[in-house]
Each structure stands twice: as structure tokens, then as C-alpha cells.
Length: 325
Image (cartoon, rainbow, N blue to C red; front, side):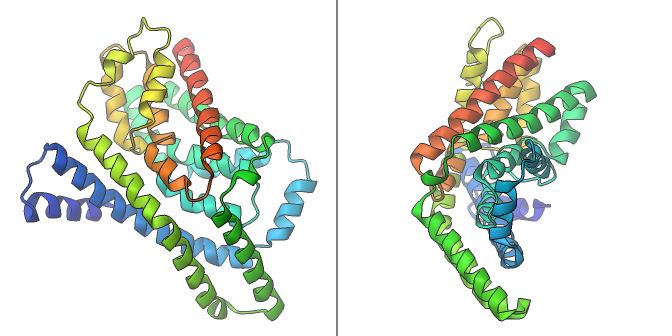
């Protein structure tokens, strides 16, 4: 889907700048150009589309329905399943996360989507089947969906809304105010577009600096972490290999399809599959670039709680994988 962006990045780095493939700086710059372009395009498209949806979305009715009706966790499961069919990396999922919050969806439900979206998608599933077989793939997909669902429930129970940043609260207030005007004046989509466009630019202006910083961190990790660095910490005889693998994965940044070949190599070298998959979940589900982007919408305390809960669930999943497989 984004091969043309990769071709442009390759052309700029290796042809225009005449840098050699494999050099740390070249790989870092290539990663930065590719991911920045891809994520900014996704940001624009997703925020614009969510702006249109939210302009028609009955925010108060959604809030009231979800608060008054007991769905017995089904809403968290649905958010996780929606994450499965949206092939985004952790940073690309954040615009939809903002859109859900603006639309009145409870924070825990939006977290379920944010967790599952980068972990499980059709590309990752296809690669998983080819690399590890159907049984392992099914267990991985089910565990990924359950991870998002259970984490979302836990985070909702903690009542974390006060830890959203003032910027998000301002966006929410503006969304409600704009929608009241849209409904009262019965405006057409054409009449709503200038207001939606203005809000898109406002959101982009607010989060682009965090995107650039986050991707720069990811690029440095991608280009400068030496090959084989993690393997010595994931030995099968190490009882704490799963939590170590998960924590070491957090500074890295990649999507599921990008990290799966690494997981295959780790398993081939004798590292337990549960430990390797916990490492993969840490890479794609949690990352410093994602934390930088979330910094615009969450306080540091909320980010720490979010990362802590998800990390704990990933570690438990890794141990279960090692037992089952």
C-alpha cells in the first residue's frame, strides 16, 4: 500500500544523498523519511474522515447509551475486533484513538482498539501462518484480541479520564459545541466542511511535533541497535526472559510485519516462542515513539499506567505461550 513512499525514501537516501545501504545513518534517515510521510498521510486522512463522522455522531447519546446499558464487556471485544481489521502501527492508531474519544466512546473501549490494532491485522496473520503454522496463529490472534479486551476493561475500571491532557479536553469541548451548531442549523456536509477542516488543521498542528520526535527516536533505534543485541537476554533457561524481552522491546518501533522475521530468527536460535512473541508484542504494541505521540493526549501518569497494564498483560501472555506451545 505504501511501497511508493518506500521507493521515494530509497531514492532520496541512496540516490540523491548517495548514502550506502546498511550504514546506520542511512538506515535511520530512510526509516524517518518513510515513516514520517506515511504517518502524516494517515493522520490527515483519518482525522479528516473522523471529523466528518463525528460531525454526525450523537456524542451525548453515545455516552448516555454506553453508561446506562450493561453490555457485559461486549463493547471492549468489538473495539478489539475493530482493531484487528485496521492494519495500523501503534503510532498510526493514535488518530483513530483521538476520534473515538471525541465521539464520546469511553476511554477503556478506545484503549482496547489502541492495543489490538497494531498487534493483530490481516498482514500479520498471513505472515504468522507462513512462519509458525495455523495453531500458533490462532492462539496469537485470540490472545491479541483478549489482551486488548482485558486491558481495556482494567483501564476503564481505573477511571482515568481526569488524566487526559487539557488539549484533549479542549478538543472534546469544541467537538460538542460544533456538533450542537450543526444539528441546530441542520447544516449540510458542504456547510460543515470548513469547520471540520479548521479542526483537522488544529489537531495536526498540535500533534505533528510529537510525531516527528517520536519517529526520530524510532529511527535511531532502528538504525543503531546492533544485530543480536537482544538474544543474550532471552535465553530459555532464564526464568525472567519474558519480562526482560518485553521491557527491552519498548524502545523499539516497528509494525507486526516488520518484526515477524526477527521473531522467526529468534525462535530458530532456540529462544522459546512465547518469549519471542512477548518481544514482538512489546515492539508493536508499546514504543517510545507511540509514547511521544500519546504525550499530546495523555499526561505522563496516564501513559505510565497504560504502558504498565499492557506490559503486565503481555508478560502473562508470553508465559502462557511458553506453556501452551
